[in-house]
Length: 433
Image (cartoon, rainbow, N blue to C red):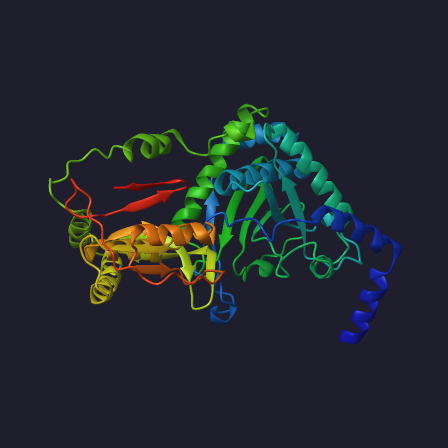
């Protein structure tokens, strides 16, 4: 049976219709990124083997008021396809503002009216590129063209297309799969059973009943945190309100934040004026914070596993855990002779590990010298030699090997400072502080 299906599939792929559709998709997807940046960062990487079947889906409602429903239906002239295009364009705008991606890929189910017996797909890829000065209306019209073209070419199997693009080096990742899907149940091939096991996808599902429009975000609670998706649902509605007021609004001028959120972020959170006790060192202030809120989150950064860094997944470190880690590293540094006026260089990208190392150096009584690994090797050697660095920390994920010069045990004392805390170099000069 499988061999027979494979034979039919291969025959279809060599037909003139399929060759024409393949040419469209190759042109459309060539050079695309491996997938849109996550709308919200997953709590942890998705591991299919750890997922109980049929128990990994929850929903968050997108509340669209009666007034908004009326305004949308008026704009789309009561046609479901136009309604879908408006909702899709709002979602694209939200993703753009959340991720700052200018090349966005989304999943869209098959259009019911266009489904034929030769269709081998369950979904299509919708690619949209943003340009400066683009208005919501212009984005809507471009997406309309992209969606119509995708539906006209929806028979060519996406899996075979991705394999071809990867083999011909037109995309860099064979696991080329967007994680965000948008659908309108009224026009798309939709079966709720197909959406019980959604793995690590985020599905924005909408439905129109007469003049009422309802929406939900389907997600896997083992991968995504509910709080952030609840915010995304509110921000979707905020954008929808703005574009319905003015379809010619510049995409870059849209604010997804509600007025109270802007007040909180811009004014309330920035009201950080406080008095520090004179003579208190930075790491001593940190330890007091650890005592006050040991279990609060202190650091959020990319998840590092043994041989890989997951930039799309976040790790969360509490104040207590950060303090414990930096204490262990500080003891190691003291055993290596680090103390007052000793410089320790740190060559690591921004990460939880880097912050841990900075605290450890300060706790050991030394000063730290941050070094950008992208500097030329000659400049790095000059910085190390000129500063009298005793120890060099190199990040675990450096792509190029680096052999530091022999350690120089010289120490420097800066007049007017009790101890050296930070020294940094810029091209052509050294700055102490």
